[in-house]
Length: 173
Image (tube, rainbow, N blue to C red; front, top):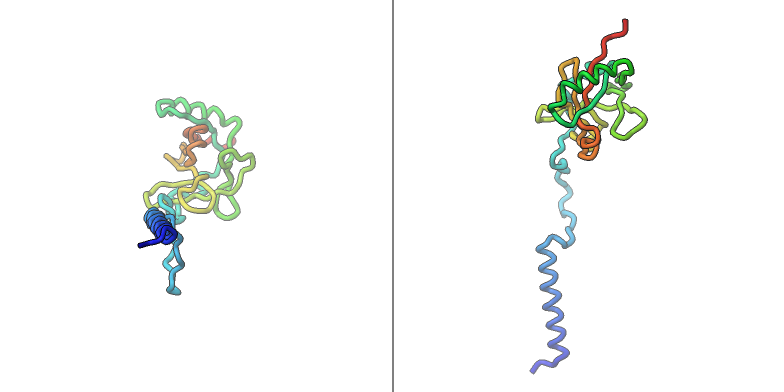
């Protein structure tokens, strides 16, 4: 016959074993380091790609721009006209010292040098160095040399700022 103290110990061990199996199945266990000296290269975050050149050059967007924004795509033509009217007080994009452009990030008072970045899907972005698309990047929706339309990747900034429309201002006479 089994004593009650021995039965309690066996029951506690069984319960601990079951709990360990359940936690292990959920991925809650610790992972041990690999025993080999060669480790696999780190994987890129899903949805981001390594930085690659954009199909738009920085010198193509340097200049004076009228700036406005829209939320509703039906307002695009009206917004382009409103941006053109802003040329009396233009938003100036200058060349950066390391090949980028000087622009503002969302909610930043001081402009900084940003890079034009490409992606395997063919989309272009403007943002700080790092993975593409980064949270602070803006996607270039369209660019024809005269009109540049961008949208922030960050959902909150995209909601607040909408589609940013830059219309190139005529050179000063």
